[in-house]
Image (tube, rainbow, N blue to C red; front, top):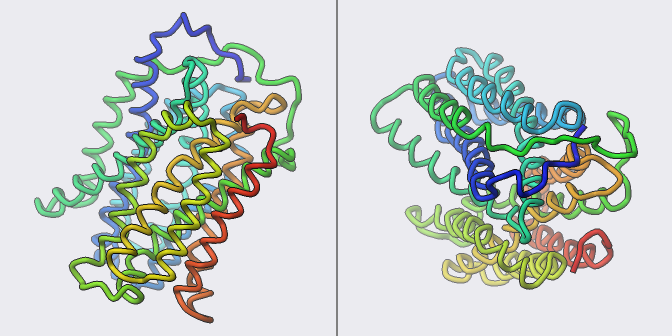
Length: 389
């Protein structure tokens, strides 16, 4: 069971930080590689938009189905062992996606991809918390920044593979080889748990304690916003902003660039201002950005608005995970699984919520509702004692 780690003097802290960052990067690279080839796989399998949408739902189902199990495995065996095994298997699961020859093959492969991906997620964030404990300053946001940079890298590599006419299966094996090399080089620098996880045992499926549930709700609001931006920003720019076709991707790009940038400057802001204040400002930025896009749906104002939203969500989830991993009553793996379970529902429910409200009223009203989530973050943060000043 894992909570205590070896003293900071037993580690080369900067090498640990680099190793953990590379595990975040590899996980993001694998996911982005899959995302970059979705259109090719859709064409290969002759899937309609509706069929693809239904099959894509298998991935988050796999993630949600094993949240509690992942936390238990990390607590029992340690995040270092679980991450090493899960990261290696994650890219094997990625290659299976390229083998799919029928729709149901893809669905099963995505479910497995989600299961192993969730184990990676809980284990790597537990490592992130452990690595941060070696430093006298917050560094969690930079780890998530590495994941964001991997998203850009994976998209660019995917574009290169497409232009070289390399099939997804071979493309995914190239990524797998690179990830395995990184695992072999960096595994020994991960932080090893060495003591009992906590004095309070938790059942596999148990109700989150109050502070963890509140952290989960904050994560829910942030991830619902991220999901809305990932899935609907292009539609918003096309249908509401009325941007020219060539400028439609500008909304998503402006959001992603600022989210990634915010994660690399977020740690410095947290060190200077404190987690609570940064989270409160983040909620205000999310609301301000969403309401600006709703009230002034023009290209310049919408780009600025989406940039504000990107900055707003940048540090929320990393900070929530960092605080959850320090919970005194629950082991880091279990605590992160609890918070992730509630948070990830936002990723699942945010995009459909946008669609339902847009169907009943307008996409502008949908974004206004998401803007309220930012206010919820700001108000809720003030009530959580676990978040230090």
